[in-house]
Amino acid sequence: MRLTDTRTRRVEEIRPERSRRLTMYACGPTVYRSQHVGNLRTFVLGDLISRCAETLHGWSVELVQNITDVGHLADDTGIELAGEDKLLLAAREENRDPFEIARFYEAQFHEDCAALNIKPAARYPRASECIELIVDLISRLMDKQHAYVGADGSVYFDARSFPSYGAISGNRLEDLRAGHRQDAAELSAGKRFHADWALWKSAGANRQMVWDTAWGPGFPGWHIECSAMSLHYLGETFDIHTGGIDLRFPHHEDERAQSESAVGHEVVRHWVHGEHLLADGRKMAKSTGNVVLVRDVAERGFDPLAVRLFYLTGRYRQQMNLTWDAIAGADRRLRRWRTKVAAWAEAPSAAMAEDYVGRLREAFEDDLDTPTALVALADLEKDDAVPAGAKFETFAWVDRVLGLDLVRDVGKPVMAAELPDGAADLLQRRERARAAKDWAASDTLRDELTSLGVAVTDGPDGQTWTVS
Ligand SMILES: [Zn+2]
Image (tube, rainbow, N blue to C red; front, top):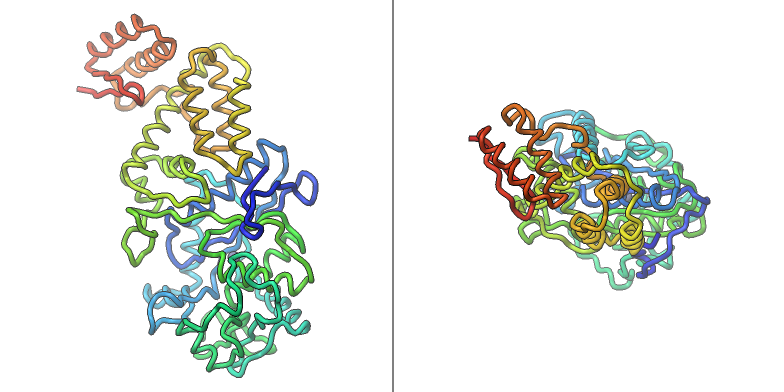
């Protein structure tokens, strides 16, 4: 398996450190609002890596994904709100208990992942339930003099104590300037250097989501959560760390500094980042008003997996632009493939089309080149030299990586509910006749359908019909 490693800036050969067992950590959601399809694109990236590891290499995958339910500060939402916890902010806006909000959006996150066929992680540790781990790790960093207690009672990481800071993002300490209002406020309150960051925040006026420690009541910083959970659940070395490109700095840079300073060596073997999903040409954000949720897709009558297929039309490390036309196109292709796969399933069984399996493997192995894999599938779909049974086997196999439920319609009557009696069967037979290029049978079947009040037209996406 080859993937682009953000730290080395190269495509690296991925081999699990523990043979045949790939360990992976994925930065999870901050559960104060719905995850949009831009966030979910990154989670599908982790899922694709897992599925390739399992299907193409026979490795088992141990994936840990955190749930941030405390400590993620809303320092980008406006001046007066700077520094407030995202959960507490949402709790105040919605007039609900912060943990009630956290559990609500956590459940929704799991539902959205399931709708996109993202296989569940082995564990989803919640930050609020890992406070002891976090406090222990901060104590270790204090003991090793990588951290100090500021005048405000918060505990800060000493950025200058970690010489390779900036290796992932290329941001060098000397080039970072105190720019944020947040930085300025913290500098005056207690941190010694603008690039230092809080590991433990003094509670201040906060009464909710606060824990008692030797440094006084407070709550953890966001970055230390991921260090504490990944070290605890995956150990001092693990294979892959995924996340959205916006987490590269400061979140992952700070995580790397914390984890390595605690154990004395590189912890993450490969950093893999997914690029942004734009909507209408702009970054998807609540403030821009261009957020798309999985439920919006379903409400417009599209299969949520059309979103997953849409992601696969781009490379993970390239920005993509989401439009409703693109989702509609992916939805049509998904339905056409399922209909064809169901038709091919009726044909005599045959072995997989090895040439195509080779092309597909090569594409996935080449830094998850999913667009090239989809081209191979489109070629296979049209290749008359490949028997229908072989097409079925190949599509069914590749779907273990793609996760598009391509075999969903196998053995099912087509859209039976909307059609007059017998029409679904005729449509299926006609689809098969057309796949076999038996145009005479196709025309006869069309006439039979017309007499039932079903008008069939043939387009580039296969047959479509209307019932009069
Ligand atoms: Zn993280």
